[in-house]
Length: 133
Image 1 (spheres, rainbow, N blue to C red):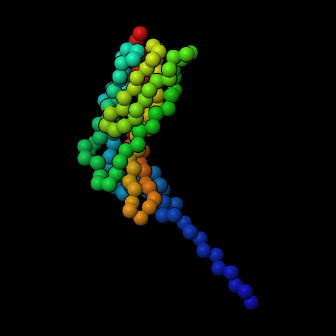
Image 2: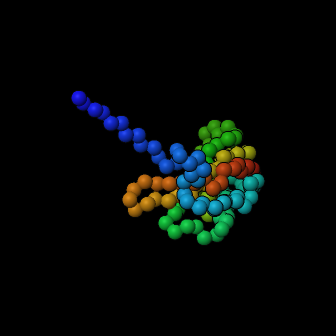
Image 3: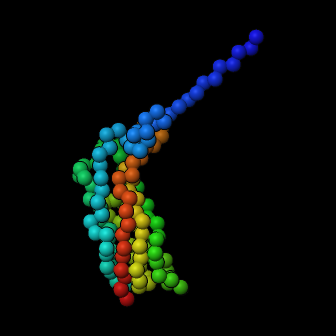
């Protein structure tokens, strides 16, 4: 008689919903955007600054900053805005005046030496940038 064994592999986070939301152990880090309403001029570099609390990141971690356009003026033939995301500063240069709104997500990422990556979202917010001619 042939017997079949079924092995169920359940990730640890499935058994612990809190761990699913915070995969980095003891991640109590938060980020604040210094200003959520910025003003600048066409062609001028505008800096978005973030502050980490507590200020020293955990050893072996790095940050990811993702920006998604929520609102922008019609760009026509003007060049797209130049965004250079980074932490603690992200720079933006706009080539057409108007109001720009972005959704911003900052993640704290840990990569183990054994492979795999764990990440926590430590900021999820919006910024509005008014660009003058």
